[in-house]
Length: 108
Image (cartoon, rainbow, N blue to C red; front, side, top):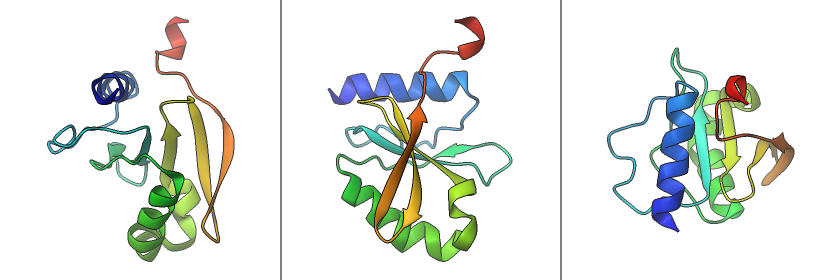
């Protein structure tokens, strides 16, 4: 499954101009990813997660202190198993905002 997630994530990043850090794939990728959109070129966070609780922990302990109130506009949270996108709403919760496509929507 990890190889499948790695391929899906890398394909998505290539099609959507998201920078992939050199450390990505060093550990087996999991279903949840965070993409930082507060950079000139959006950047994938090298760590991926299996559980929502782990994603929330990362956001609350690392991103919220850095990004503050702009967190919801500064990151994308994607579930590559269910193809759903989420937003951090505080109080240890994510809210689903909709589906996303791996492929290039312009060619569908």
